[in-house]
Length: 267
Image (cartoon, rainbow, N blue to C red):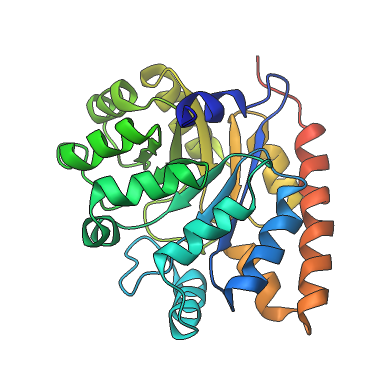
């Protein structure tokens, strides 16, 4: 069993922001989503893999629709974990899921299976910081990191509490709300990241609403990682064929990686 937290910490390059693309597992099928994940993995530092859920409170309409399609095609949490296992040897995989699915499987069983598939971490947006000790203990025992989230509305006191628990990296939500909007790379976002950095010792990845390489590059100048999610799902949705979607993701992943490599890091 590998140490997921250590693998995730090591995945953040010293000289640029990490690229963290997202794929909805099982959308539109398990096999297709594995192809998409492989196309992006060639350019990613960390890969985020979504587990479809019927009540995804943090997801906007684009990811909700993809998750519903995945559920309708018969995708189950174990199928997505198996996708992670098929990506073994590539960038560390972080699952994005909800607490109900973990409780339904049983925390010990869920994290043991995730660890066996070489999953490094799990994002659980509906797991309160003050709750879920059994879930956190099961994850720790399996060597799987829990990746906490923080939003612009998070207080300094709570950011410090998040920092005390974050053993890999923290996911900073660029806007208060759900995925799928468009980020504003402005002084408010920079101020939020600066405030989080004063309270949280580990790496900070920014997500929600990032669509273009220019936005990724701009955020990469002051954040440690950049998460691209809804836009990639839309690219798959709009592609005329499966092969075209794979090619588009491969090309866009290369473009994003190049943009981050060219970002001027803040001192």
